[in-house]
Length: 467
Image (tube, rainbow, N blue to C red; front, top):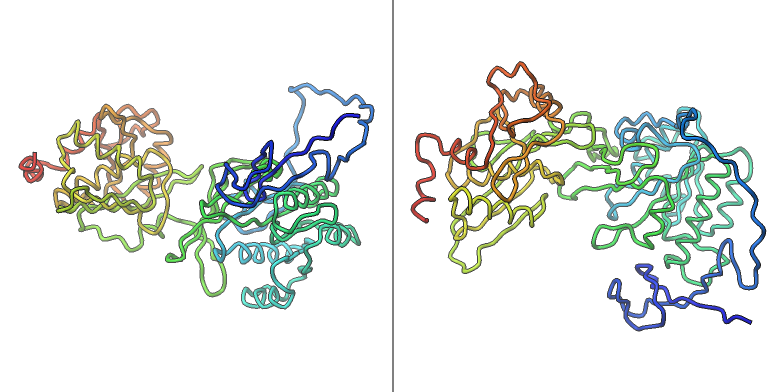
């Protein structure tokens, strides 16, 4: 008789070990490794012999394909992030920091769908029914026919959902509270989360109901639990935002039925989340056009152009190691821009503290912001305000060259709509509008931008003296 094999799995990060250890090498946590039977759980068990397989149908790639049926929430920003609405039979995982507004957004979506005659079931594992009702009253959703339940047992939830008419949308808040009788571990562990999510996804696929799962996030901003959960679901969305700011961003990082780079922008108020149809106006609302060190970046989030202000402060320091503080951008990329400015443009920043901030708490991820960051740094060092009606975008290489970026026409169209009359962009952009009229200033190298900001007044004279 073959000896049964066991695995040792970390209950914090899901790392698999060959033997037990006190400390997990994957996440560094202590006393989180538990022995598990890989043949146990749903769909397996010791002593079971595999059944004989059956042939499945094979199809050609040239056949007709139908669009996935969707449930529109009529919340435009949520539908945008989902790619057009919830897909029937799909599973969506939404993660975010505690108190960021996940439950508020889902309650508003549930109420909107209920008003459109959809059957919605909201299962809360963290709050009682009375607490959920209080939130619904605050959001003006108490008059809707959303069905509530406060339960954490997987088998009881599935039995409840199977009774009566099939629901159109099921919300589980949250997956870390689910537990099943077939797994001998505490709620929130890797085995319980994996088993609960697998059971919920199976129900969604069998019945055609859309399933929304709420997940907690770790200190690093990742959804807590095993990474396999993100592979099991059809879409993964992150609800981001800073509590010091009133806006929230719903960002799509995985979507089997739509684009993966769309965002939805919301504004937090006392009545819940309000849609922001034009995020550029929100991020530029409190802009001081006469202050040096501020440049407007024309970015793209999926198919949506977004204009945001990049703020820089360069100040002399007496410390041996200057400070480099970054909020809303990659700190390693800032170091690269500083090195290129010093090596190829003669801008000496080794004796200066550098502080960089993206206004409004927005976070930039695309490299097209390099040119705007460089313009803000040089403007702050020179003490000269950049033109108030100009936007900047372009990627900077280590050689100091400015590389072209995609969707130039969309960026310029958004800038023109908001009253920006000019733009500094890479030369050779493929989709540059023909009727530019001299409004677009193309630069081939970062040194051209520095010379343009310096102008004829030799504004970088303090830099040359430091050199």
